[in-house]
Image (cartoon, rainbow, N blue to C red; front, side, top):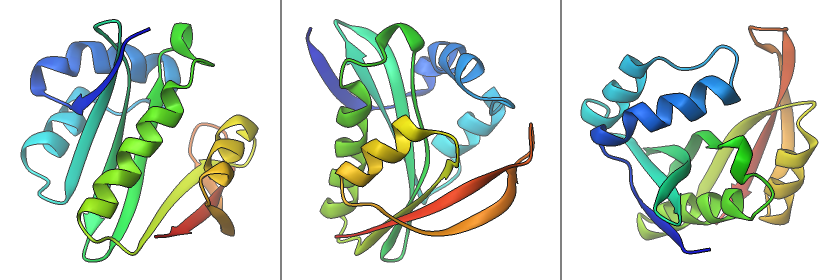
Length: 147
């Protein structure tokens, strides 16, 4: 499989929305992604292509010397192939290139696959955001990684 990481473009949004709607409840709107790409000067979004097809995406906000990973999603048919790792590595590299000192994210308490991936990359659980997810009031685990 040929894997490429590149910047997200507006022309990617139809495919991004397909993945978003299958991955998250509630999903972000197309308008939210468009604002992130065109108006949020702190935001950086990337996509991972598998054999030429967008298989996933991720984003990070770069705030002074901290990165905040906003989302990572892989199309269900591409899960388990290492593409989430490739996206996470890409987001970490963006932070390294911009002299970011630490990265944070929130993850569902029940999402053991994601938590395991983040821990492999040096993220540590630092706290809980109670009832963070509106679809079921699940807690979010706050994780941090120093660079």
